[in-house]
Image (cartoon, rainbow, N blue to C red; front, side):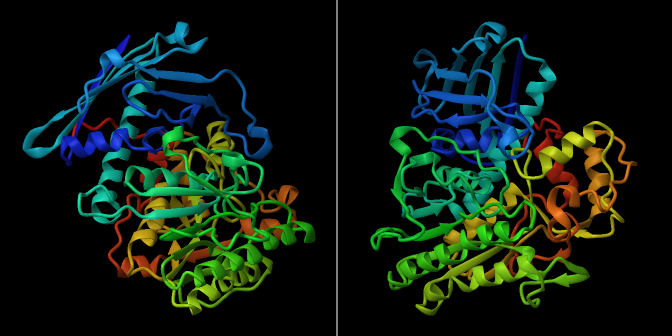
Length: 485
């Protein structure tokens, strides 16, 4: 069985090839709905080796690895620099079961465009492969458009930025570092003592703490970060610090849980801000935040960045978290706080379990369904971070949400439509309390916040997925296969 597909993208062939060869391309082009996730990038398209491993849709500790890894080895005999590379599956039982051989090509299309070609020889159902390439083509074209707009360091006159990232192995951190890699910037992972790449696998916007992709040795760059006592030279040579680390907010809102959430954010952020302040403007700071700042029950009130701080334990923590950046701001450094909404990704967070329940036909609105959900696709959030890193015009608080929030009933209906499943069985409003406790359910599952990205729309920021249906189709593999983008 084979599939031979192609798609024209509006960039020069050399730029398309540069993207494919850059660190981060594997992570950017691996569909989140696949049952295999990348854990190691090849160092070379000529003769490198990439590794993927099985994953489940289950959250937290239940998402333990199971099954053998898929190893894809690049064949030097099929390599033509700038035009073609080939990978073969060499690990069992996949090699015998599939006979996988994948030929990637980049050729000149009409009027200066690039023609991406993919031919796969494998015993794999064609519809599955069609979904994969529909995702890959759209993802690569959108990434290249973002890079061309405000993210590239690949132009001859451009200087790559050195970007230090905490929480680099979380869901958001992995996506941000991958996009920085394909944009040509240098990523410096700040890891906790004693763990290297696998240390401190968390970020402030994700409940999935195991999404890291191990870059090839030539691309790996790390420094040890002690949150309690960071070294005074931690940020030497760093142009931008991206601070994503923090314990997961999800959980029962007990006193101990809230202390863990607070302690993982406030003091570590303040200490980093003090280091940024000591850099005398040489380093900018982009720090995660959350729409929990606005409080859990704001109803239909449109909430721009100027809206008042809400009430409740999470709102208080987020307000203090943002204030912890003040040393950097007072010293004149550019500081951006990204108040993140509900992040949609089939690779982690709440979407995989929600999709799994919906596929059974038991999905339905939560409670009344009238509560507002301020969501954002992972790719759009990643674009916001990239812009915050490179655009000096962006400073202060930024709402990291899509421009069209929806009610829970609308969200449920759209998810069911994308998955072709009914959503007629409502979930009682008390049900989330069984897992999260009453306070946790009110602050998280039942939160009612209509948050709008006013600061970004004022800058005419382009969203890849301003509407929910398009975001869900991309994440869940329901897009059509394009021939040109």
